Image 1 (cartoon, rainbow, N blue to C red):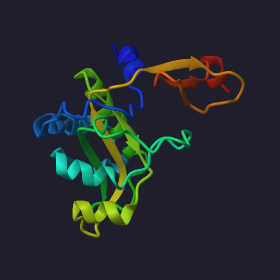
Image 2: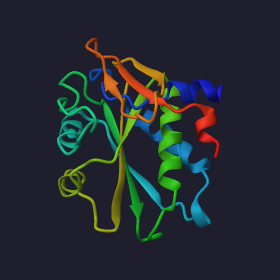
Image 3: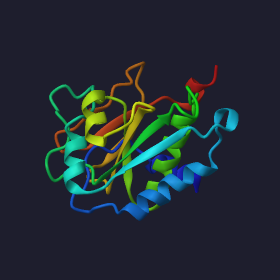
Length: 187
């Protein structure tokens, strides 16, 4: 059910790195975006598939992880993503993707969860370095990096206490994420 997929779809930041994600699975997840709504129906988003270990390592070096966890520099070797989908706006098609990027990223992650994987949408990256790793032409603008793999961490949803929305880690490595209640979402 959709509700179960949404509960399981967390921002996973640690993965079973050796459990690789093949190009066909990545293509399947990208194919889900074909069914998404698109502003003006422009369908201007494209994806660069990164799945081999060497290139994944190069992409990893361009990313920043978990801003609230100041003493954590990101996943250690062995817990890094097994693949990435780099979301790109093709400016030869349209100059803006409106909200298509979020819709498509969520769709990809729901597909990954349905297949027993998980991921994290990363917006913190060194753009020039990532562009160089991917050899991107100027017409492709990086929107997001979707890190993917089999999750190697437990994410716990908590009821938000007050207005503190910052996530945190326990000593055992479990990742806690506070969520607002339904009544708090209704204005």
